[in-house]
Length: 116
Length: 115
Image 1 (cartoon, chains in turn red, brown):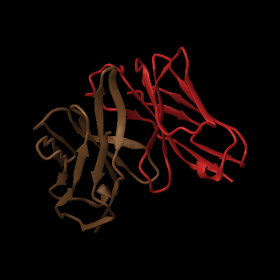
Image 2 (tube, chains in turn cyan, red):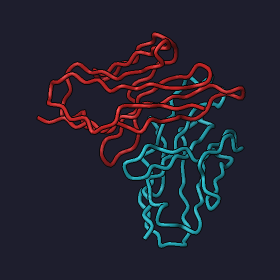
Image 3 (cartoon, helix red, strand yellow):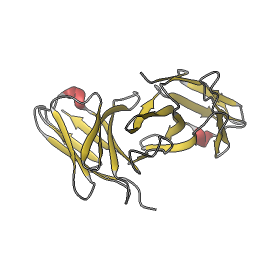
Image 4 (cartoon, helix red, strand yellow):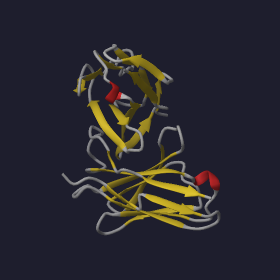
């Protein structure tokens, strides 16, 4: 079965550079979530999209932005990178924001960003 | 707001020991509850879930029962294996007027099984 695809899997950037992460949800899933997981930490919710519109916003820094495109894939853009942005970034997808809260989120393998 | 509290680790057990990882939650409304597992260097995988009171989720020998009266969803396994070594996250997903929220995670419990 198709899973959530994230790219790149690993990314190394210098401070103050820009990075873009991509997420391709499971086919027919219309809701995408982005999470950030620091070393030894639990995943922290950044932002979510439903039908190409932002549906919820968590602890996403102003330096970050994201969007969901017409084919439902999503991109997380990170600018003016800081050392503290080094983390594992997960994308997850689900079927429908209005699924009455019973469904699980399906996670990708994550993109590991290292800022030097 | 929503929150999940789970026992801190690391939890170290011998192979074939009985496992319990405690999880309690606070949520508005009636959430769905999940356990996710993260093996070293990998992503988050759903282990089991429960969507209403007294539901029991089970998978790979793990079980957890949705207890509304104690707002708990403790994870148990009768006989753990070395391959169960991983980080386990308890999580909830709550309903809102507009639909469903994303997941709220606990801090994670690192489980180490020794042969």
